[in-house]
Image (spheres, rainbow, N blue to C red):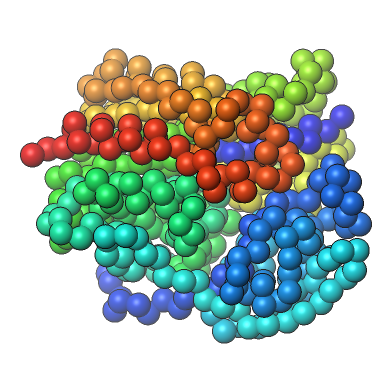
Length: 455
């Protein structure tokens, strides 16, 4: 039996030159929230389509509202490209910019609709009592969008370098209810600047190779180039740089420490063990949060754990993996043929598996706050984060471990792990997230940063 609800929520050279500001085109904005359609979601919502993405939210005055798309519709094609997953939507739109024509085919109330319109550009970010500066990080074959938010009335503010998770999604935040925007706003209100850089090909970035096709080393280089850009910013206090590694960003952070140690590193919802071992936990422990029985997990893992070994350790490529019919049944066959796995290229995951994550943390000699959300399904359990503080303390750093009550992987509060699992399974997660931001997370990080600032 295929394990339907496994979630990989994971946890995201030196020449430097600068283009004139604002040479990057503004990427388009669809204006929707969506979820990959599953058989169970289609059945429960009386949807005819069995492939596509379910539109869970359509924002007013957006590209998709102009197309007439409504909540509950199912997008099946974009510019004649079949859509089966959220990653398909990202791939279909990654090279589209403001003013480009976009054509959508979707199911609405059991009818098939086809419409076209011009793509609207993304709005520019804004924060209360802060200035938002859009910049560019330019290096070989890449011009990445950078975003620096600085609090008004604060000269040379301490700064948080936000390191995002594994997906190829933008780090821009446009909606005030977005949990990431609320976290950044709380940091700004506390007097901290916040810096982000897009991954190659994501958002406004122009890159020879898109995020979905690069390896882990190329992604690390992008964050290193962003770090160099941050160190050259004149409006921040470069002696008080704090990294915040969310999910995969928590793997990136200690590797950036080898380039230049910041004043402190905060990580949330990440992993302190090697990636292969995390994936074993993903297949073995995480399904229990979705109500899968031990017997079913054991049966599924006759395939899952063998795949984990062939994929991450033996470095098999898609066509070779598909010789095993079980893999074609359990995993997305089309993605495997393209050497893609949950939105990233094989070489990303396979090179990540070669990183000795505990050893990278053993080299960290700065302040570290390792945090786990009490109801974080994707990080699985607190053990994977707690070990980070232990490794740091065994060596030259000062590590602290903290559980954030009620919080999940995406900075959202829940009453239980089961409630979190239910919203992920029935498509209501985004709606729940709008009014349940984890203020405990922002309060804990602000308190910790203030205690570590170098005055």
